[in-house]
Amino acid sequence: MPALFALIVAATLIAFTPILVRFSEVGPLSTAFWRLFFALPGLALWAYLERRYVPKTTALALPSTPWLVLAGADFCFAADLATFHTAIMHTTAGNATFFANTTPVIVGFFAWLVLKKPLSRDFLLGVALAVIGGALLSGGAPATGAHTYFGDILGVVAAFWYAAYILLIGKAREGMPTGAVMLITNTVAAVFALPMALVSGEVFFPPPSLTAWGVLVVFGLVVQLGGQGLLAFALGRVDATLASVVILLQPVLAALLGWILFQEAMAALQLAGGAAILVGIWLARRGSN
Image 1 (cartoon, rainbow, N blue to C red):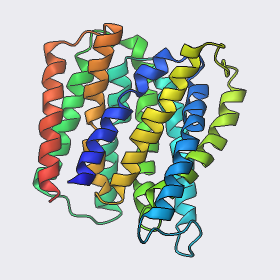
Image 2 (cartoon, helix red, strand yellow; image 1 turned 180 degrees about the horizontal axis):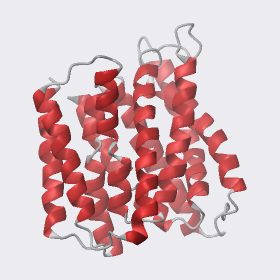
Image 3 (cartoon, helix red, strand yellow; image 1 turned 90 degrees about the horizontal axis):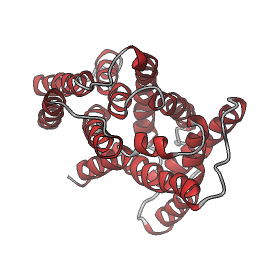
Image 4 (tube, rainbow, N blue to C red; image 1 turned 90 degrees about the vertical axis):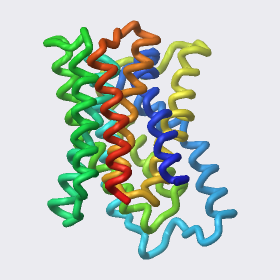
């Protein structure tokens, strides 16, 4: 139950991603770098406290540490941020978050095909209902149309990167504690993200104002440190297939925030889609027991 609660809180915090990208006064790739950068002090403290005070916490350099797996997760996360942040600028908040979170289908298919993991009927029904609900949540938006297709496609590409990240982080968490995994992942992802932001030609440094820098600091602390940190914590205790379904709470919350802050109207079809996602998550949770 603590792990499931951590997943729900993680999804809630990560749902602020499209909103903060919209408020950011630098480009989407630069925003990806700064969110990673400002999370580093908190993650370093997390790793230190975890290693010092949590019983049986492993060190950073055990022979069993899956370094290659972790390196793959680092790259996938940087690629996910780059594609997802760019997608947000070319579609609605709800669309970008939904398409990026078709992840459960990818994770579930991989788990069944490659890992030979049996998937229960309730779980499959829950995934189907959640994804259909996400489609309703996206398709019912008045802003959906030809002008959003580029962002929608980027959202799907981001889903593949995020699915790989979830699977790899879950594997890495078998040999490393949360703080160490997130500190290393965040640092390496920032190294990948920095040159991508610099060569893109977009605005890299925000203007010298408290608001402009504050958005990036909040991004790093709330979404990256809090949201992604709790997701990594939960992935050490919850199966990746279930985790990928629970995080579908994000498009529901993102659409709600988009409605409140950007007047992205929610039709009855979208409300039905949000309800379907919630029921789907409940079914997937029951089917994973």
